[in-house]
Every structure is written in structure tokens, then in C-alpha cells.
Length: 344
Image 1 (cartoon, rainbow, N blue to C red):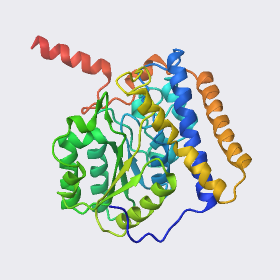
Image 2 (cartoon, rainbow, N blue to C red; image 1 turned 180 degrees about the vertical axis):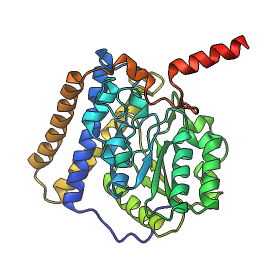
Image 3 (cartoon, rainbow, N blue to C red; image 1 turned 90 degrees about the vertical axis):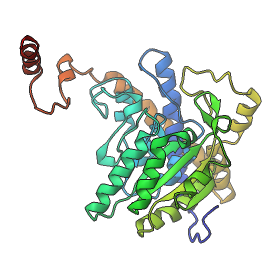
Image 4 (cartoon, one colour; image 1 turned 90 degrees about the horizontal axis):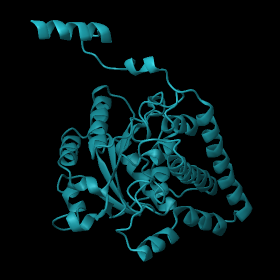
């Protein structure tokens, strides 16, 4: 269902701001893939292209002190939550100025100063982390809320149901956002999902569920506004399912040949940035203003690449920093003790 008592509609300035955010995400993903193919980025890049309206529409209504958790396709969530594109690009390039000093890479963007709890390549472990954060907030009687982003493939994973159960039992301040792009890696999710509509699995836990068009930032924003207010009011966990489509393969190197080209072309015509631009024009905003907003976003991302290229690599010694050691020994002490244990 959709929210039934919405008293909010975004203003022109709101939507123009959201177009800027969506353009930042779109350009970041294009450049990240290009940098991967050029050998400047190592590892993997899972592009968020086509899904920008969801992260943007939801995070628009969050405070800086609120938290979000993410998954392997997390660049959009990070940018929408306010993480610096410069720091993110440095992280992808493995440079010292990155969000994790170049050690985490694409799938591990985290910035606690912006409430970004981190991306996570294990499905759906970002959700269980989010539930833990929400429980801590409730125990500490704080006012923040948590948003957990995940894909439709996560709806077939056991830990997600544990997270739902825990959130309901303790009436936690969390919004679950399922970005339903129809695919789980290379498979149509519906072909590997038993039973009726998977949203009924969520409803079985007693969580109120709402659906929206994930390619329309106005609709996403309107839905998110109400659900976030419900969570803040102490109503307990809420669930949003946003239907969308990922433009590219599961990751940048994946050509997506398992998909019908006609299906892909049709989905790309249903472009969230184009939808928002059309909405702005119908509300009196000149097309050149919209174009300038997108061009400014492109310049921000171009600058982030220059920053990443010019930033130094981490030193070899930094590999021994930020490593959790329960007994807080140095690496050499640990090796020494290990030898003694072997001798004994």
C-alpha cells in the first residue's frame, strides 16, 4: 500500500536540490566505472545507476545525526547522506585521503561523521548492523533513527528475517528500504522466490509495508517523509519497497548479457533524473537551470577524480594500523608469542 495521510509535497527548490544529488550519484558511478576500466580503481564497482531517486528521496528527510546502512551497491546511499565525493573517490583509488584511508575500497564506504554506518558486501549484513544501531539508540534514549537499504535479493536471506523480528520485538526506530530492481546478481528475483509476493513475508512480522515508484523522486520523497515521521514518533519499524531497475550489470565488468536488451532500453527510458526534470519544467523551472544544476554536479565529480589522482598512497606501515587485537599487542609481540606457543 501507499501512505494514506500524506500532508507533504516537495517544493521546486526541494526537487532541484534532489536533481543535483541524483546527478552527483549518476556521474560518480559513470566515472568510477571508467576509472576501473582504466586500471586506476582496483577490485569491483557495483553501479547504482538508475536507482538514484531512492537514496536521494529518502536521505533528503534525514538529519545529519541519523544513520544509514548500505550494501554492495552503496555509493548512492553515501553521497545522498552527505559523504564527500572527494573522500569516496580517494577510497576507490586506494588513496590516503579516502574514507577508510584507502583500505576499504568501493564496497566499504563508511563515514560516521555523516551517519554512514558503512556499505557491506555480505547480503544482508548491513541490515543486521542497522538494527543493532537502532537498538543502541533506543537503549540510550536518543532521538536519531536508522535507515537500512537493501535489495530484493536480500528478501530470501535468513538474517533479514532475524532483523525484522528483532526490530518488531523491541519497536526499534528503523526504516527498512527495499530497492527492488528485479535482479539478484544474474537471476530474476521472482524466479528464485517461492510463495506469493515477498512483501507478505515482511507483513507477517507485523511491520507496516508501503510501496512506491523508485524511479520518481517526488513519490519516493513523499512516501519517505511520512514513514520517517512515523519512525521518529515511536511507531516502530516501517518498510518501504521502491520498484526500480539497475541500468548495468551486477558489477561494472558484468555486461548483463542475461538480460533482454529491449527490457534494458525500456528501463533506461524510465529515467529518474528525466522524471524529476520534467516535473521541474512543468512547475515553471527553465530547462537551462536544470542543465546547470546537472553540470555543477559533473564538475564536482571531475574534481574528485583530480583529488584522488593527486592524493598519496598509504604507507606500507599503515597496514598494521586500525587492526583490532584483543590483547593490544604489537605485530612483533604477537608473532613472538605465537612462536612460544608452538615450541611449548
